[in-house]
Structure formats: structure tokens, C-alpha cells
Length: 141
Image (cartoon, rainbow, N blue to C red; front, top):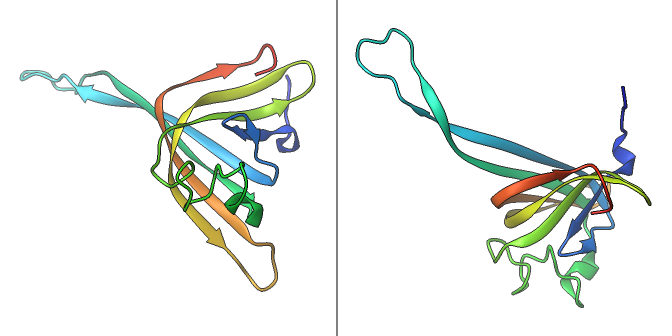
């Protein structure tokens, strides 16, 4: 049985590696639609629409607010919260020969900066997927 560690993970947004990623999560879910009719003692369901969402925790980097890499700048026209969809790749394991990753289009729905007296300044990003997500375990993504 193969096991993986989080230190081989990574996050890319619009083909730019987010250098200071601490963690990320992706949740996939599917709605269910009730189809129970009168006379049944148990509820029945069919599959509904699917979706994915998640979050990422990064070290805050002031350079996000200048230059061409403005992916998570909440004040930027090209990286604003709720702006257009961004291409995201969530690497579980990234190496030179094979990658294991989820990928899909996301809309940033929240950006929170956290600062404490005795720690690093961090940012938390939340997102909603638009369309589906794919999972790849073969070649470099």
C-alpha cells in the first residue's frame, strides 16, 4: 500500500506555482434528489448535481499585490474575490516523472489575512469550483 506525505504537495493557479502554500483541501460532493412516492415506507433518491469547493492556507506575501503575479490579490482586477474563474491544480504528489493531482476551474470566494504577534502572517483562501474536477495519476499535469 502506497502512502504519501503532504510535503510533496503543491498548488498552481493559472500555471503559477503558489510558492508559500502551507496546506490545501478540496471537497467534492453530489446532491441527491428525493423520488419517494406515496405508499413507500423508505425514502428513495437519485443522483443530482455535483460540485467541488475548498480552501488553501499560504504565507502572506506582499509581492502578491504588485507585478504580474496577482493571483490572490483581492484588490486586483484579475485576481479579485469573486472575479472570473481561475485554472487550479492541487498536487497531492508532484515529482519529475509522475504527478498525482486534482484540477479544475475555481472562483475565489474569500481571502482572509491572519497576523499574530508570535507567528508568520498567513492568508486563507476559499474557493468554489465551477464545472467538474478531474483526478490524474499518470503524467505531469
